[in-house]
Amino acid sequence: MGRDGTYRVEVLTVSFPDNPYYLQQVPEEIERVMAGIEAYMSIRKHVSNEGLSFVEDEDDQLLEEKDFLEDLWVRIQDLSSHGWKLNSVPKPHLSFEAQLIDGKSHDFAPVSCPAQPALPSAQSVIGKQKHDAELKYPQRIRRLNIFPANKTEDLQPMDRFVMEEYLLDVLFHLNGCRKECAFYMVGLSVPFRYEYIMAEAIFSQLLLLPNPPLKPIYYTLVIIDLCKALPRAFPAVVAGAVRVLFEKIAIMDMECRTRLILWFAHHLSNFQFIWPWDEWACVMDLPKWAPQRLFVQEVLDREIRLSYWEKVKQSIDIAPALEALLPPKGGPNFKYDGGEGTDQSDEQRLSPNSRRW
Image (cartoon, rainbow, N blue to C red; front, side, top):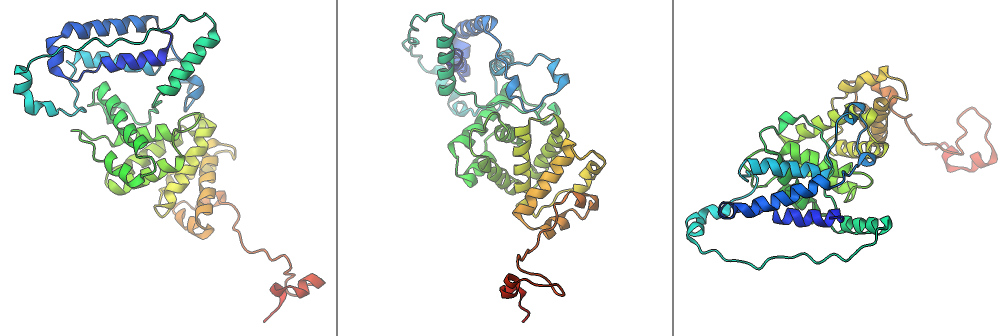
């Protein structure tokens, strides 16, 4: 019981037999497993991740936040109330429905977990076991809620969780193969659209604290390829996510803010720096230290590093007021160029830059 991560995986392994015939034939077994999980959840200690949250919102602190396992248990209970039917799980067994109904059942030997040795009451030992369990069974996602619920309101709560697991499987197992990753992410065999879930899953990984699971450049390239693979759908979803995150930039963690700046500048550099900057021209009315104004300023500065001053200046012509946020225009600085009509030192006269051909 005390090894939260290990016990969690064992429980989830036995509580998802996606076989309707098994559920129909042995419902008492499923009820026994559900009762055991409920008993464990009633005595389990709540795990707080406030220190690793993406944003700090005073209004959200008034609400009781569920941790990962509590949220998953609520989804499992909802799935149980709907007869264990999921639209996100393929059903290849339907082609063999008659054979499965008439088929003979086979009993398997019971699966027993290794016996837990007696542990001392020292908190350090328990903490080490929990740490080892989290390394072996890491939490794969800490959800960043960007879009309103009505974007995915037709999905069951467990369908959302399964879709996130699909997307994370593709991201993790195709790490380094950006084009293949985007190809499989847009080709999931589900009967509904999931662009918003896909965007939230990627941004949740990119902004995950304390560190993203994979290199940030990998998520950047995957987003670019997804925009090219779904040109009529995904770019608008990404733009909507940027707008929502921009509104929350003042309460966003500084590390997440920096990652968002680096990603956004790199992303725009692959799409000709096109962005409706006039929507953010209002930041010029804010103080110089305002987070939203600093965000725009940092993005423009990073864009110049990826391109050149005139190109970025041209991209913000629709919002000329933002030109004040651009860094000074750089140019050549010849150390020994004294200029015309001025006295030159011996070094300046000997320098090739000072000679007039």
